[in-house]
Amino acid sequence: MGDLSFEVNEGETVGIVGESGSGKSVTALALLNLISPPGEIRAESQIVFFGEDILRADTKTLRKIRGGQIGIIFQNPAASFNPVLTIGSQIDETLRAHRPVSRNEARKTSIDTLSKVGLPHPETVYSSFPHSLSGGMQQRAAIAMAIVANPQLLIADEPTTALDVTVQAQIIQLLRDLTDASETALIIISHDLGVINQIADRTIVLHRGQLVEDAPTRQLIEQPHHPQSALLVQAAPTTAPKFGETS
Amino acid sequence: MRSFRWVPVTLFVLFVVVRAGRIGDLLSTGTFVEQTLVALTFTLLAAIIWLTITPWPEVLSKFFKPFDVRIASLVLGAIMILAVFAPIASGHHPNTQLDLVNGQLLPPSLAHPFGTDFVSRDLWSRVLFGARVSLMIGVLAVTMAITIGTMVGMAAGYFGGWVELVLMRLVDAGLSIPRVFWLLVIVSLWGTTDIYVLILIIGLTGWFSTSRLVRAEVLRIREEDFVVAARGLGISEAGIVIRQILPNVVPPIIVNATLGIGQVILVEAGLSFLGFGVQPPWPSWGTIIQDGSARIIAAPWIVTVPGVAIALTVVSLAILGDRLQTTLNPRDSAQF
Image 1 (spheres, rainbow over the protein chains, first blue to last red):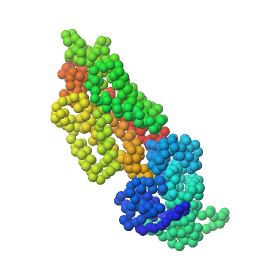
Image 2: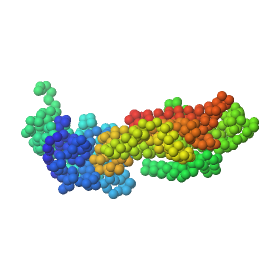
Image 3: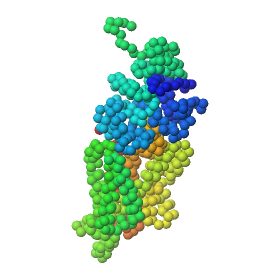
Image 4: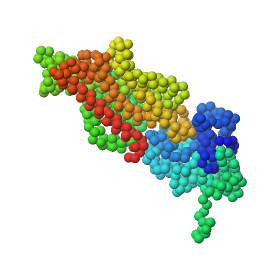
């Protein structure tokens, strides 16, 4: 991947879009210093979060930022939960890693969060195992796990790609509600400009590991500057052609 | 309830520790209190296996569905109960020479269901008490082996680098020498073949393959998305090892242990047969076979009975281990 530089302001929703292999997910992992060898982030790089350089933070600070101040949601909700532990115990664990709460308080907060992400019967979900939930429910639970400690920034790496279209729309709506209700900033990563368009204030276009455009979403879609952005805009399905109309 | 899982586990560990100091007592007929304690060991062992598989309670009914699994559990259960209640069920002290004049090498009869041996000891009593020794050596040696194997395997798999290099070459070295040679060398260097020593050396030579298995599992699980997710959500490394990786390694370890107990019983029988195991006059299945081997033509029942007992136990354990392997796989049980 090449050089990449961008910023996200408090409460802002930024979309990162690009074709596959353009470095979207690597960017998400890099933001939390989760790149595993042989991959590496060049030594002179900087990722600054509220004045703290994530790449140079010690283990303890890093752990506090991960999950506590930056939450992350992964593409495949089934894989982001440990199959042998209940949903609830995993959300509790995340919360207790960041907030000094008792088991009972953690349980209560976790159940509250589960209902906040729109899961019916949060108590049942709390004591369920991941495999007994549907993909959409798993992704909601994953969002609950990411936001349980009230992070200031949420990173969603292709949060809807593994889901079908109707569920996709619900998850986008949920992310929008959550970020609107609080001062949480959101970085949403997708290959689908349609998804980005529904939620992001500003969009960054990646192409072969390079940032090629960084513009307000509306402007990007109406007047893309870079040829790659134009390609992506063309590729996104817009409204269906009217009956009888030929393209 | 889940958070109280550690209670039975701790009790069991404490109990084994306390018990291990007095394993010699197992060989005596003992008091009622002591029998209760032995019964408790097995109950707790069952409770631990139960608690380990609670995440999928449906599995339990599924587990016992196949016919061979039911037979195997019945056989193993019967052997365990008979072993635990040996002083009550046996009728004779296993070492008493009942009637040296007229009672030698008696064939099976109502008074002696399995006959008597060449010094007129009741074979039924000896086999029951032998079961205690053989099963106890099996359980404790395997517990030890899988504990060491799991720790080594987890360390090697998780930390990688030179830790892995050193540990795994050590394991390779251990595996390159046949286990019986290891055991014979250690036994002859040690001098005594006390039952504790026997458990210790069987345990110490049994962890190599477990550690390889655990390492392979850890290498696989370490790369799973949920481990990255946990790290991304700020869970500490220790938390990841204990909460994310260990529970996923437990199923293969349980399977490994089940099969391991059968193996250890065979190893102990082999050692005892060679005269390095449990020392006479105390019975283990291996020593009874050794006793009987000299009179295999005149009194074939002496070698047959413990031989069949060993075979039944090992086969039952293998069937159960096999079944555990299929049911404990989360991907399989997800289909239930």
